[in-house]
Length: 107
Image (cartoon, rainbow, N blue to C red; front, side):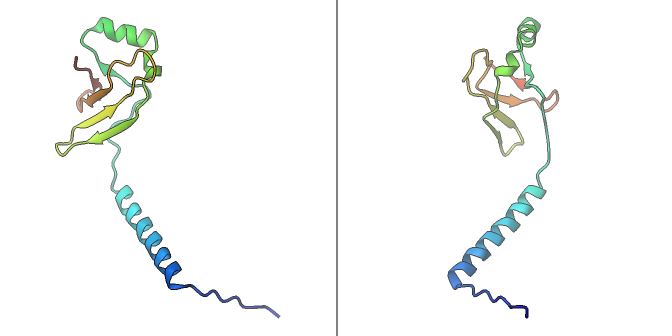
């Protein structure tokens, strides 16, 4: 003989379940509308001189650059924060040049 199982859900659990379901539905809507704008295999900066750029690339200083945050402003500008936890990080805050996809270095 097969036994039936009945689950009784309390009002508190029902509210929690509804909240979680609503949150998951909202996250699905938000993340399904995201668009990949830029991606990098290594951070590429718009240095003032070609010599600075060559030193950065030849010494693999890009390995020291770890993105800690990305922000988008109301004008569509993208800002990238790169903490100086390691040496040879050219900037701590850079704006992405949407034409070249390089991080602009302003000193």
